[in-house]
Length: 459
Image (cartoon, rainbow, N blue to C red; front, side, top):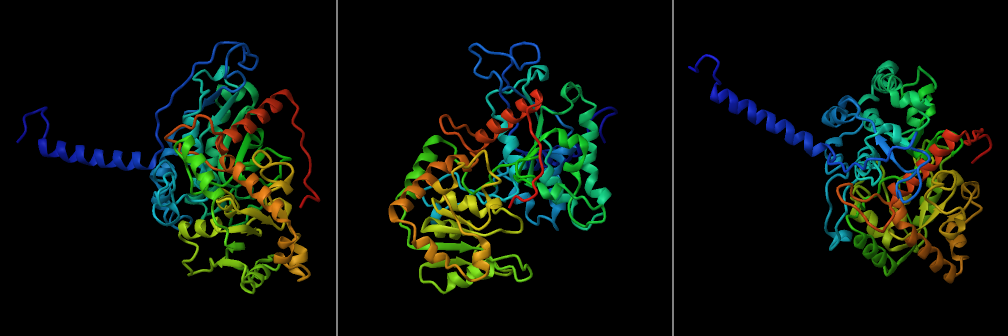
């Protein structure tokens, strides 16, 4: 029996062991929290500094949100079974997922089985490494809100009523608007990442069984929102950035070495397609694409139909993309596809069938002259059977193909997210390009230079 006021040794060890187990699980899921904060020099509102300050106009303050808006969502990843069955595995390693080796990745590092909707954690991790962080919100040029909107969506969007689906984002906005950082500019200098398509957060019909209404709220409309697919095509406050790919380099050398590898890769196939048909979607041209591909000895397809394992291993996908000259990219479940970026990272020239699959989406990351790196074949022509995709691609001169592929290879750094646990020094990745876009947009918003308009007629 322990002495009064003493500690029961067995109880102490049991509690200590349980605490250690919880902390281990928490740190496995959570991105690294070490932050190097640069203190911004005091200068009014922080938007007029100059001189030798390399961070002038680029200072960012990160809100310290209550953990229910990020860390606890990761902690509860096991509850997302219906919406994301393997979420706990997929958000491990700072959001990159499990590491991959062998096959296409033999001799390579920085490759992970990254989920297409893992951007919340990846971007937050990169923000922690951002060179121009400040702990003085009054000196910040922009304010980052590390709400894991995409992860929260996965946990609370299947089989639940609208009020439950909207609860977390509504709670966040109530918290934000009470903050002095928000009141300074009404949230117009705030930005956040919603790591899914923007449509998932724009449920207009309260009776709809899908999505939440986060981005339709007045407060959210004041912020700049980054997502993997924009709903407003650049005419609203949401902006598209690349889907996460499987490649997350740790050093500049890894990027350059990969570019050299895909530059020298043998392209055995003229064209390829990774995906399944959409029998119930009359607007889809996937059936026509699969039909044309299977009837051509110059085309290779990996089927992704339910029950098929062909396209479930990233190594198989990357091997095909690395051995293809052109990669066919019809619309997916929405206008865009993660496959577009996997293919381009492999040095494969994308073939689009709708401008909104890329051209009207990724304005910060892709060249304005779309013909320099891609091909557009109108989907109506394919649907009607009046166009042979292979014939159209063979019309492109060999020298032009080489030039286009080189342009794709040059774009690779802008399309991938570096490992958030490391720092690149000379290479600008998708995060860096995104931050340039965010800061420019916030600056225009503060100055009242942002133009809004309708998207009617855009395709």
